[in-house]
Image 1 (spheres, rainbow, N blue to C red):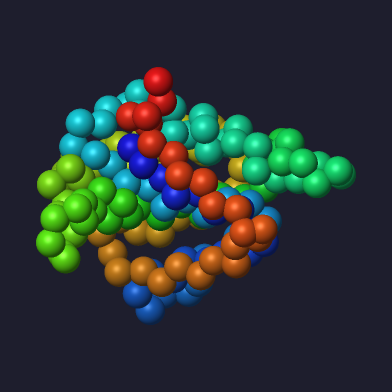
Image 2: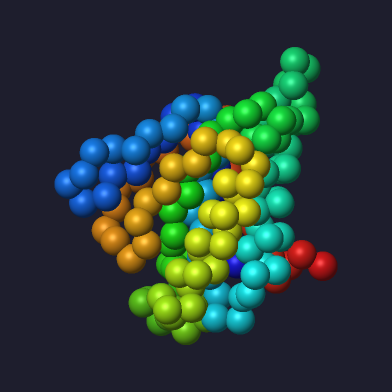
Length: 149
């Protein structure tokens, strides 16, 4: 699994014409599932997201996690994280999991994140969405469960 994680002061997701789903201080996570991922990848990614020290302490050092601070999470599925642009001009998505495989693993990631007790907002799988992000810092981190070791 891959994720782009951004520290935000506020963010929101809007699914089609529905009401915006906002968060305050916390993290926005854009998460993609690869065709060879399993539950272990979802657990690894959730642990990294919750414990990633990207929030400053009183000296300005990045010493706190979203979990430490009781922040909020906005998580959106994004298969395009597996777009391969090395050849040609159109991304190839052959490494991305098919929706039938990706949905249960994405939901497993959400379950692991919910176990933290933090406020969690999500988009809707395979739906056109608008995501508003006010990136604070800016701080943006790339995570990949296959590069864990």
